[in-house]
Length: 96
Ligand SMILES: [Zn+2]
Ligand SMILES: [Zn+2]
Image (cartoon, protein in one colour):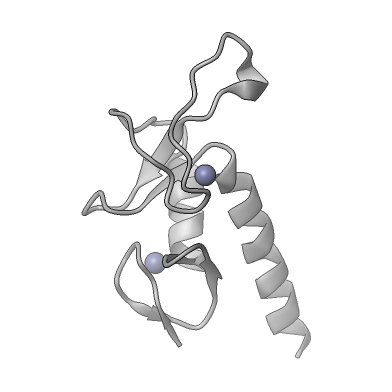
């Protein structure tokens, strides 16, 4: 069991970042909330990069979700990766 940095609850399946992790329930929740951008200039807790502004959409990096306490943030580049890992985790778990 691992303590999810987002909700603070122990979960079986989490996706790890550097010193942070997020559980599958939080991944599902942030995925649906991702169209409500977080205000302010933050640094992503998973890639440790700051927001990047560009006129090219594919070069933009925006913090799109933050935990309730605001201490864990995920950017637009990391969310798809996290969703992918979460997906693989669940498939691996259902196979065993
Ligand atoms: Zn969680
Ligand atoms: Zn990131």
